[in-house]
Length: 498
Image (tube, rainbow, N blue to C red; front, side, top):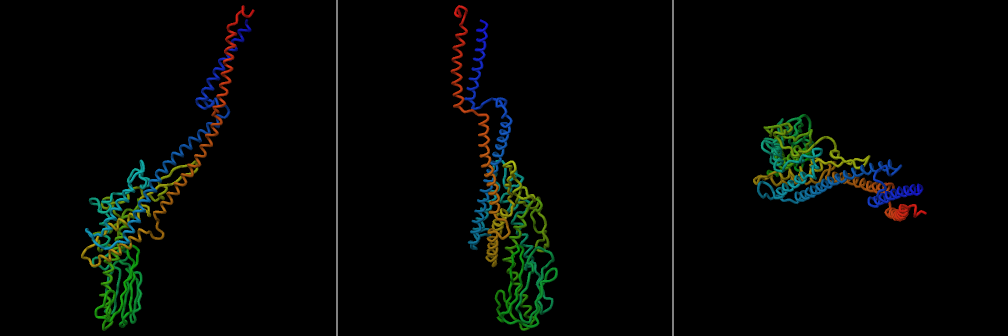
C-alpha cells in the first residue's frame, strides 16, 4: 500500500507539472513568446537585451528623420514658390511698358508689391512649432510685415525713405551726381569727384579721347579728377568719353562729339572760334549730359544700392543709410538703429553657415544639416529686387522718367536673374534636397536593420504556432491518459487489490 501511495503522489505531481506545461503552451500561443521574462530565454538573454536597445535607438532615429523630412519639405516647397514668384516678377519687369497708372508707378510695380507680400508671407509660415527660415531663432517669425518694410513703422524708416535719402546723396544738390565741373583755365575743362572716399555719386573710372589738339589727363588725385586742355580746336566728328562707376557697381559712359553745327544735339559740343570758346562749349554740353545721366542711370543705380544697404544684413551688420541730414552733401553711410530703421530680417543672423542652424542625428554616426535663413543671399536677392522695384516712384512731369524707369527695370531684371558668383535659390534647394536624400537613405537602412533585428529576436524569443499547438495536443493527450490512470489508482483499496 505504501508503494501505491508513493506512486499516486508521483502521478499527482506529474499531473501538476503537465498542467503547468499546458498553461505555458497556452501562453506561448497567445503571446507568441517563449517566456515572459528574459530569465526564461536562457543564455541568449544578453543578446536579446542588446538587440532591444538597438531597436529603441533606431526608433529614435526614425522619429528624427520623419521630423527632419517634414521641415525640409516645408522649406523646399516655400523656396519653390518664392522662386516661381521671382521668375514671374522678372518676366513682368522685362516686358513692362512705361505707363504710369497712379501713385507714380506702372501697373507692374503695383503687382510686384503684391508678389513681395506673398513672398514674405511664405517665409513667415511655420512648420509645426517652428519657423524654418529664422535660423536658430525658431520661435521668431523671420521677416517683418510688408508695410513696415516698405513704408516704415512710426519713427523707423522703411525702404522708401532709405532709397530717397540715398538718391539725394548720389545725385547731389546740383544734379551732377556729386561731380564738380570747373575751368582751371579758359581753355581747360576739369571734372572731379566732390569728396575723397565718399560712397556717393559718380566715380571717375577712365577717359578716352580722339580729339586732335587737346590733351587729356586723369583720373588722378584724391578726390579723383580729369582734365581736358585745348591747344587748338578739334575736327568735327572727333570725340572724347568719360566712363563712370555707379553706386551699384555698373558702368556708364558719357561721350561728347565735336560738331560744327550751331545747334548741337545731345552728346555733342559746338566747335568754337577759339580753343577757349570750344572749352566753354564742352563744359556746357558735358554738364547737360552728366545731369541727364544722373537723373536716369544714376538714380536707378542709387535705388539698387540703397536696396542692398537695407536688405544685406545679419546680426553683425545692421541696415545702412545715409549719414544725414543734409543728405545731398553727405559723405558717409551710418548704421541704422532699432529705434530709427526697420530691420526686415527678424530671425537669427549669426556668422555660421545657415544649414548648421538646424541639425538632426539620423544615424549613430550621421548628422544632417537642413537649417535656412531668410537673409541668405539667394532668398534675399529675390526679396530685395522685387521690393526695390515696387518702392520707386516716378513723376508725370519728369522728361527723364521713362529713361529712369527703363534703367531701373534693366537692373532689377538682371538682379532677379542672378549674377555670376551669387548664390541662387536653386543652390539652397539643392543643399536642402541633399539633406533630404541623406535622411531618406538613413531611413531605408533603418528599415532593413529593424527587419533583421526583429527576425533575430523572433528566433530567440518567438515560437512557431504550429509547433506549440502540436506540443499542446501531445501534452493534452498525455494528461488525459495520466488523469485516467491516476483516477484508477486513487480508487484502489485492499479488497480491490486482493
